[in-house]
Length: 484
Image (cartoon, rainbow, N blue to C red; front, side, top):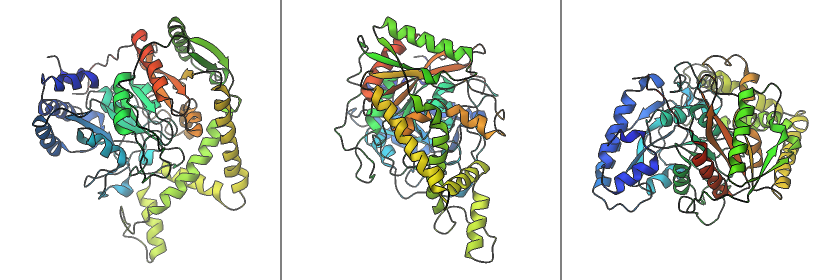
């Protein structure tokens, strides 16, 4: 058998089920890959001994579970019981939770087990994985490229065959943008479909966990495993659990797909425009009707997001004070000084920047001018989508305004960095599902992605469209292994 780690999750599951390979052999193959890929800096913590023990156990059990015997690495934003969870931050460098996040627990209940915790931007704040306390992750596409953020460790590990699939979190594009940069598939589900309980919070009304995989069918399997109602999360949607993988079909004839004019932005690279045209052509050939639509408030999405998200972050991150857990400063003559020094030492520059912005927009005299106004505009952005979804089944846009950029290229220019989220943030503000699909390459050979946006709780439809698109797009992620 050729290298098992080159295969998709669906193929691996088939091989484990038919006993062509054992869970132990599979786990050993991934451990070997991880040990040879230290240059990528994708992992913060590894759990190899525990993973090998779990693999042996699954090899002696009947194969009845959806993810039977599959080792998975997950973003280090998901709390894992008795295993260090850092959120990419110095302030949580010694934090070991005594509980398991609902999403990871769902995966373990489906037969998967932990390989390790993946690097990410600090508290998920970043678009390049350069804000992590543990150093930047490298994109396997090229040794000078960022893997996207904040789920950069997840996208890098997946593209480099260090995990068969993975999970990330998406607050403003943190699953879809890294997926686009690494030629992988990333799904941001409807807000509330996957529990937020046990995920280190960034912006509570925007954060959503989702799968990152090599193929759309893998994405359906992972979503099926990780989603579900959770009474511990007040924003969790109480609905019947769906079997996305069993209902996947490639007949999308007659569906209507909207093309929003507002996603053609100034100075957009010609390659992104050409990719969008290619996507439209593929869908048209599949019998889809393309309809020009308008989302007039899209231009306000980025400024709205960068008021709402930092405001919620400043509130969520107030809990890190050095008293109960995490880093505690040894400096300061009293409690207040200890708080101040702990936060000053424990948080990185980007996190401090967002806390300052968030505290400012929530402060007396500015709340109405900024935060309240942003919430009103957020409703208008949502209404734009709702109005258009009365006449279309899904919306097609580019995933990002460019391919992966070089490490350090945008680090000193926050606005340029924030503009990377221009196509992804409207979806989070509206709470909708969106799927990023690898669709082509630029002239340098770097991957580019297209985004499918669906109605709330219409994951099955965008997965089906993505499945049909993938079969006809013929994109192959050909990454040369330069890092070992």
